[in-house]
Figure 1 (cartoon, rainbow, N blue to C red):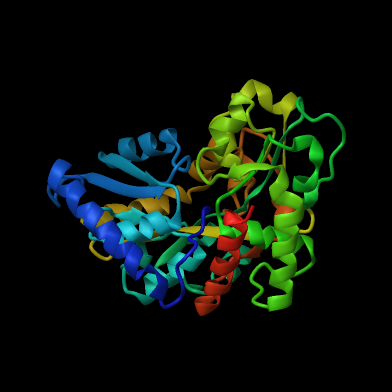
Figure 2: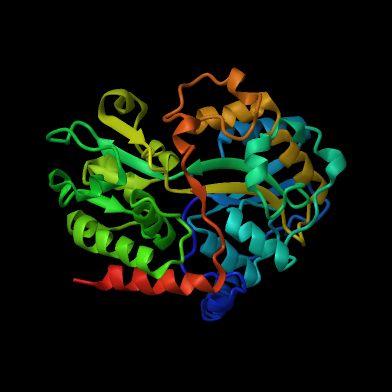
Length: 366
């Protein structure tokens, strides 16, 4: 989903320093508090450990799994693929299931960080949308990854604060009525990808001219109106009224804004020109202590009635499971068709250095 790493390449060459630092921090954390002690209950106990994105695991779904399988589910959360990946590479043990986005799923498969799924347990895999599965080119047979959610970041506007009409494109961030009350994510692939999409280019472009045009748009038109680039706190700031315009994920804002405000105050949309999309998957880690239970959980999620509960919890549209829509009880915040022009962020390999250089210029320019 989500906040894509800013410095990981296909060969993971750019992460060595980061992982070394994370390893030191992780070792200190372990020494002080035993924070790596997952699985201390023993491999035979029925406790399933999930490592998932923040705002991404409905309690009611977990409680139903616990009731049905006579177990306990514990969840740790992360705010970015980079955070998840670096913690695992630094030596964190005991997690059973992790939820990487497509570029990291590809990296983790190649680095043999994942265990093959027990296909005999995946009796609900027939409900996975063929269209979504066709996008999972890194694992089209679901040997390691079962799609969890296909989505995209969008734009959230506080209609009560807007002083006039606004264009429903990424160029809304150039609108002076939101100056001093706007934010975009601290995520180079998302922000640069939005600028590329608005200008009619591929969100994975490595063309120097196209990237230069995107940089110019962000620096000269969008950034002057922004308070900051914010990958984690924008939901709370939007809910409090500090931000009137946000680029971000619907579930983050939904998790902070009370239900009674949505209909009259909140406008969430994905621009027609599209933008970067994400495909998050459920994967079992290579050293998962509860392999059988983990397979059961992955299959359980895609029971149509259960998956409908997941969608209802976040007001997501039904993009992955072909049958869950008929069991939904809430109206999605946006329609799945709004993502028709979105494109998955790919692992661009060493080309990521181009994005990183541009992003540093954008972030630290006056």
